[in-house]
Amino acid sequence: MTSLRCYYLFVLLLFLAVAEAQDLSANLDSIEIIAPKYLPSSRFAAPADTSTLQLITWLRLPGLSINSIGSSGLSTLSNRGMSSRHTAILYEGVPLNGLTTGVFDVSLLPIHFFNRSHLFKEGLTSYTGNQAMGGALSLGHQHSGLNELVSSAHYTSTHNLTLHQLWNGAFNKVRWTVGWERIHHLNQQQFYKDLQLLTSPSFLRDGHNLNGELSIDLGNSHRLTAKVWWQDFDREIPGPFYLRVNQFQQDKNLRSALTHSWQKASWQLDSRLVYFDETLNYQSPGVDSRAKTNLLNIKTTANFKRLWQLAIALQSENVTANFYTLSRTRNSMLLSMTRNWKLQHGWIHLSLAPHLVNDKWMPLHADLRVDYRSFQFIAIRNYNLPGFNDLYWPSGGNPNLKTEKSFQLSAHQLWQPSAAVQIKSSLFSYHINDLIQWVPAGNSTWTPVNQKKIWSRGGEINLDYRPDWLPFSSIINAHYSLTKATHLDDASVASRGKQLIYVPLHKAGLSFKSQFSFLHFDADLVYLGKRYDTTDNFLSLPAAWITGATLGINVNYKNIQMTVDYRVENLVQAQYELVRSFPMPLRYHTFFIQIKYLPK
Image 1 (cartoon, rainbow, N blue to C red):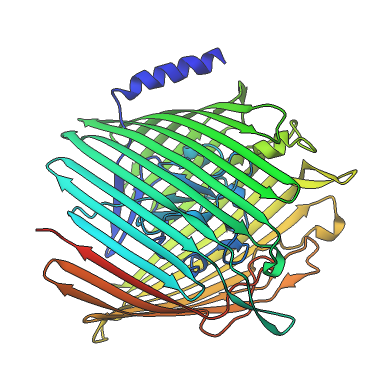
Image 2: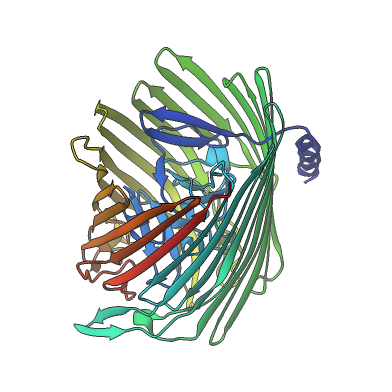
């Protein structure tokens, strides 16, 4: 512990002089992918439009699954057959996933604020440490560079109202953004049960997100940035088929970051300090669960000629919960060394990252990426730490759990046969050992054990077509993903060789976006394949065709820009569930208006 305290002091002092990295851009004709320097540069990171309230936003990303307790409960993401606790949601490069459960509820994201998010499909533990073994969604906000005030309102026929205010400002060398989002959702929906059309009671989700960013240019290649995100939500959680079971949850979260960047000659020194303070309370008949978690992350990175990168990250995690016998703490240090070799037509990137957790060395992280022309090959060895509930749950926690380990191979190819067509294809193979699984331990208790070996493999293809022969601008996107994720070794013989639960073998989609003068039109079609919800694959959720369409207008008058949209969700009345016994809404309607004021 003494060594960790010394490192904390060292990095804290160094933070006063060094910096957090800015973004790198890789332009491929009209496609721009942003890769922050604390993440590996990748032309194949998928832009994720998180600035809308549409479920189909997540469904149309190849290989990505969303598990949602209806339209009003917990919603989590999983990638390529991996668990939701293996898919990190990153804020300034630090996972937001809960320390107790390991998952993050994407339904609480301030989606109108994060307008520059990217999905990294491969593991990132060499760069972020824990919880990114199955990839990561990196949240980002991009300042418009203008002084502007943006107000918007979004209302659905399920009686959900969202209000949003955004202020982007710039003066001399200072830029700032303030975003406020107010949510009042009743989530009253129609669904079928036993061929009978029902209407659910209302399940209130009420709260707000407040985001702020301030960036100061201190000189040539010298910048200081401060960010804060306050979140406060209360909601009622439905039971199966939207029965009222008196479950309530309260989320109060403060997230903040201070970053500093300085570049001189061939060197760039980057630092960040990230602090999370989160409260999660849950009440139901006979249960009163209260947990408070804190996370402090300090990272310093030195880059030399973009060929060498050395980094040290220190993190302290603390959980105080009324269901633990005492407060629990985990301290860690991640050392990272990355070497980049420039080729005539590409790059080779190699990253090695030893990880010290509570004075014990973890298995070595290793990340190899080869870029040659339009081809990329990736080989990664990484792991995931057990969650605090896995280790310390009073009626079954297992403090002797081993880390979950994985070895991942993937290959990507980019084709651009013409300026109007771009095709991205991927193949992947992930082997996971010592997967943590909760199993019955007798006396009505469950305990986690390392008992599973998983093999997830498959492929993805994504096509973008911008027809230049139409009298209006448009883009057509088509995608397909095959994910075969099976148990190789399981205590239950009936589960061996069977598909993991809630992972569709097939998923495909087609979307069309167009704009003509002041009109715009979007249409989406997603095929969600059959998903099993028992480990022996005896029960399954049927495949579904999910559709939606938007018609809108854009009006500009002097220094005011206005957008009005009308959208129909689930156009063909598909009856489907993302989690068993929680039907998703039948057809419903959304209305959106946004007014942007650009002062002279």
